[in-house]
Image 1: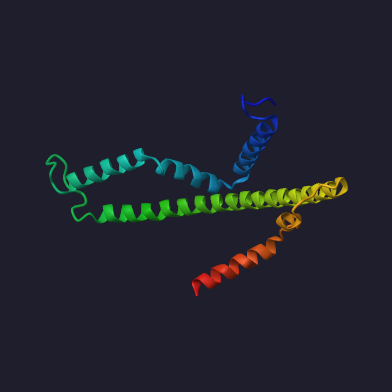
Image 2: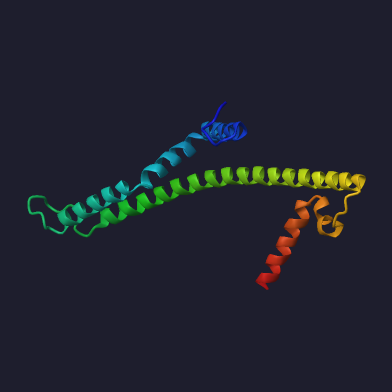
Length: 172
């Protein structure tokens, strides 16, 4: 699949694969998650805020008696407070559901990123070993100490343990 100018074919394939995977993940989402996502898209726009400002302003104007043609129906604003509270509860739940779904997708992407990084690190370690062997065979002098550590694979558990110890020490 030829991509836009400046993009390699491999990059174009990768972009297509990521896009396709996101579409598949969206299609697999439960009905509740899809509804929550749609609600989140609606409430996350400025026009939603503007509509609320207009509705609340109209409610206040009518119920403070500024409009004489309409009798106040909520003079103590009990209904307004209740409606706002119920709306806040449901909107918060929709947002939390959407955030949980997004967090799970982010975790999957982070895991993929980690796996790709570990694979790239392993491949680079193998290339360094190969280059070192070729240099030795050809009699090319090399500075072994500078790249000796790079020949070894990184073990994720060791890195995570070291990070945790550093964070624990920082907290103390």
